[in-house]
Length: 280
Image (tube, rainbow, N blue to C red):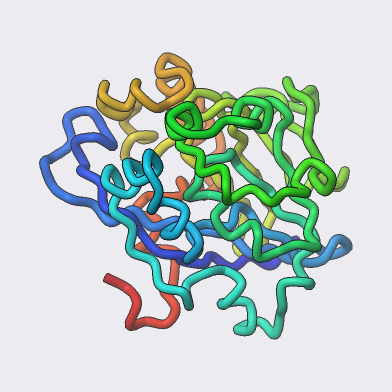
């Protein structure tokens, strides 16, 4: 089994009415949750890297300032993953792999803090954002400066579609290290090439669902986000289909805890903010 620790890297503010159809006109704190995992033979790795201070700088120039206006960010330097590692006696060089669910800025802003790690992502996801700048990048929720210059030289880019043994409802998987402990599954719609991760942890099996859903409620009730999100998601019809698939998986595998990255319900129940004073 894997040791698993959930980290809070800060939050942005979004209206619930955008996150789920029929949602209320109230502001939601959407934390960017990162998982720090220790594999028994591969050592320490990360599921995404969340927010980092450089993201604030990356959003200052035009047109990237639009990103900051659309989702106001609240993240302190000490919340960056690399600053939290000493809690476990770790340093940046102790992280060997970083699994990127997709290439949106709020999932990879901390990537440059780990120059020795091997990023793992889908080739389709990378090719959808590679070389994009300005409005073309912003359309994909990408801040180009966040990707290291040597990304392609270091990265392990996986071919899709996956062809490994399927998960109920979710379909074929990719067994990352061939031992069944970390299995990737495609979660299309929100971003090209997005993946989820089924991890066998000491706390039980956990499915990290990235932005396959923003709210656990959306999975339970199969309620997609508001129509306005069609402006920036990759394929809105696939978003709805992925929600249906996650709902089917949840019914078939109730023992698996599904963790959408930004869900306030999951944050309140599963994540211990550090330091405590940083929680809103």
